[in-house]
Image 1 (tube, rainbow, N blue to C red):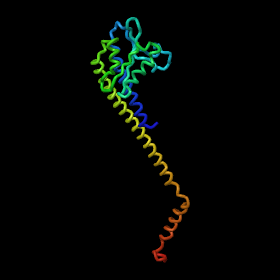
Image 2: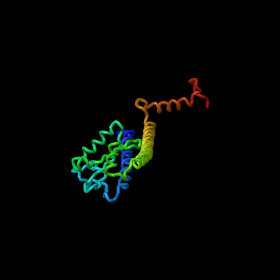
Image 3: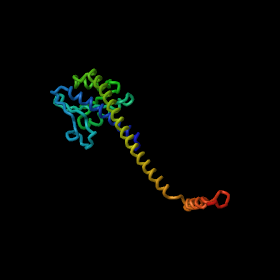
Image 4: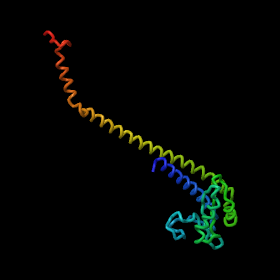
Length: 212
């Protein structure tokens, strides 16, 4: 996995988690306490799957029946499938009519079918409330993503700098070793040149011996 790919995957995962958790916590706090709302974790979920993702976000009571709510964000082209997918996932355990898929658009609006169910079973969760916190969630997630992205870039550049320094150090050592060792075929060149220089030191340059 390249650094760029890792950064993108981590950034996208971070955006989804921050955005989802922000809205879920706000909704949980807003539900009337007489409905006994509680978050669903892996240890207390009613689904047989051991996968922590295979669970709704919130359980609450409505007329002595257990309902569940699950938050998700979706693009317009996939918003209907996102709604149906939540019912298919949890309907077998809780009953189709007791699953509230809270499907949100990225512009802060709520899917109409989700809003209709909220109006019936959780009227305290209003459209304006969700729109406000949906927009805040998107903004917060983007800010978190920028910080995470900057951190990953900083770490990647730090690692790259260290690698470059190590490479430069190896190159210097290799250059030093080559300087101490004559290239193949030229082992005697230095000695011959030194001997010729000594032999010519007593010559006048014309092949005759200089006067003492």
